Image 1 (tube, helix red, strand yellow):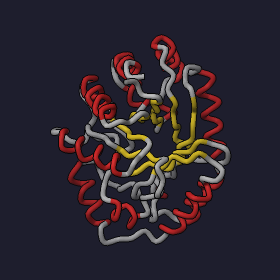
Image 2 (cartoon, rainbow, N blue to C red; image 1 turned 30 degrees about the vertical axis):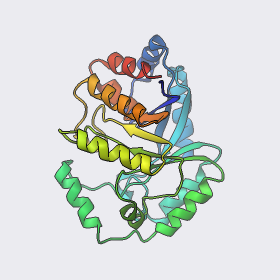
Image 3 (cartoon, rainbow, N blue to C red; image 1 turned 120 degrees about the vertical axis):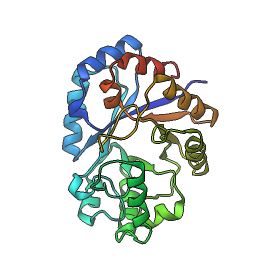
Image 4 (cartoon, helix red, strand yellow; image 1 turned 60 degrees about the vertical axis):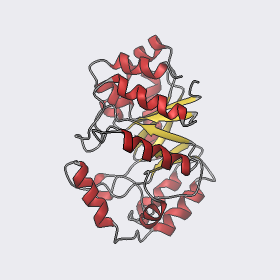
Length: 261
């Protein structure tokens, strides 16, 4: 079975060699969709134009709104109303809304992140209702894909990081732990329970924290791809195109994805 759709996140478009990527995608005859991180509709349109000029093998270039780090970077009930309202500026666009607690100002470790989330247990997002209404309103003008954690729904609701739709992606990243089987089972079980349209796998390289654990071998990616197939997912997302281009052998990672598409 092949995936009907493969999406690649692009969190750091300014660090990606789009011309080189275009050459690699053309050689592999691989045409994925991407969601590119952007700070406004104008910023998104600028990136879409620039990327299209240099990388013609992409199928779709969609928007991934983000905030500044000081504003929290992702969207949640802890986000200010003014920042949440920016989601309404996007019109007639495919948009990914990343629902996660504010970016912590710490160096990444699994223990550190666990402690950060533990401290949030006693807190509730004060703008949960406003974010819920805003996503609903934004969905009237856009194809909105909601991105969520694979953790219990009551916690996500408390933080304003849950939205009731099947048009969602659940993050099934397994690279974060050395022993991945339990994490893989849990993450995909949660994604299936949510009846999510998509799941995302990775990491192929580090992300916003700059030091998150990531795959060491292409075979680790393929193991997650196979598992996603067995769980019945027809669409997947991968973190990320920027991460692939940071590897010494980006062709190997692109070829691996192509085998499943």
